[in-house]
Length: 96
Length: 416
Ligand SMILES: Cc1cc2nc3c(=O)[nH]c(=O)nc-3n(C[C@H](O)[C@H](O)[C@H](O)COP(=O)(O)OP(=O)(O)OC[C@H]3O[C@@H](n4cnc5c(N)ncnc54)[C@H](O)[C@@H]3O)c2cc1C
Image 1: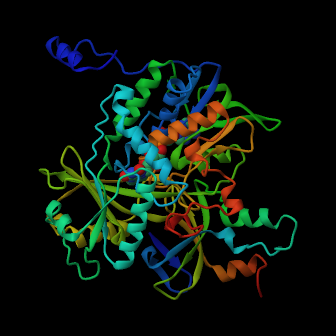
Image 2: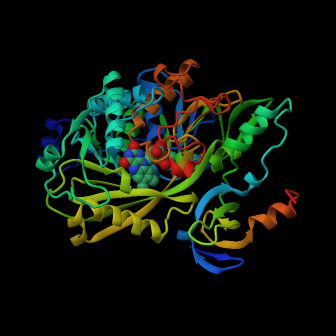
């Protein structure tokens, strides 16, 4: 599997480690909320696990150590989109 | 028809004309007391124990393909009960005891072979961990034996005990562990369940659930609606996909695990060897092929095929301890999809939807669990209470923090 790194170009997936669903970018912040336990249980443990398009986090551990959001089809391993996780997180309203 | 030595001789003398199909091919009825989704080892075992132990007759197993076509027929056939934690060890030991009596129970030759399993030790820390594990096993009535390098070399003289990075310093053996002919497990359970009146319906895919007012009334299938008192899902690597149809999200990701088999050799490997530090395990099949595997590929997948870096990694691990492997030709490799759960342990539980039950999250270790999983699931379905050996396998453990995390990896499924 080849991941087309936005800065470095095509890299072998073996250079990366995998974290999982890109929704993990959105860690709940409301730790004092009434339903904080439910929110964190859902965040930490429950997954959509789709057969088909999946947005997921890959860490370029043996490269520039950037985090990427990779859009991949879990039934074919085909990759349709790769972005820096930082850009995705900002675009989705996290951080500065 | 009962199988026996007498019967085999009689058929041999009369041209084998008396054998019939081992199970019927019934049409689905409109309603059952129990509908089991998935004709793998676990689904068929559940049906068998529901009928034989809990006396339930109105049971159907719905399988989208053919029985035994899933992970039960794809795995590397290893059985053992060498677990550490309280939630797991009694359950897997119950399973090993059921394997020991399986063929008599089913009147079917599943080729249960207790050839022994050996986990290699490479460091003092690993020895300490395995001593602790061995004690946990013996406390739960299992057998465990700490072997020295000399003892190991007597049995496995070809092992490279002087590998620079992972020298072999001993091993933890479970002599009652071994292998089982995996297809025969599905066929044996199917035949035994069928003989007690269970309908095994192949080519019948469950496409949805009929849920009204929080109660599951049955399943939509490719062959029409089938009503049910209780619906029991056990679809191995397809759990995420199936339960999404009931609106559920699970503490599970689906990952691919590859396995490999070489050309047939004369007997060279008497038991099962695992090299945990280098991610490699191997046994020899009755046909002579060396069957081996290693790590999962490590990312969500439903592709039923892996990628080459893992092939390389597994073969490197093999060569490190088992140099003679380099002379052997690889015959086949394949991948299977497994439910990797968030703590590496399974789930057998009711769901929040009345009448809908779930069995899954077996990771890459569910084959050895087949009899106990069937027994525990049948118990839960028939009595409404968890089986005493499976009380830890509940959904709520993720919320309450009572994880059963053998490897201590936390909620990262690809590391279990
Ligand atoms: C390569 C590999 C090696 C392994 N090695 C070992 C090992 O050495 N030891 C060990 O203990 N475990 C091992 N495992 C794990 C073990 O095989 C599984 O955990 C176990 O077999 C899963 O249970 P099962 O047999 O019921 O699953 P399956 O046989 O996969 O049964 C599930 C069934 O559900 C059906 N199904 C799915 N969706 C639907 C639907 N919508 N409607 C109807 N039917 C449906 C499928 O077609 C399938 O037949 C291995 C797994 C793999 C992939």
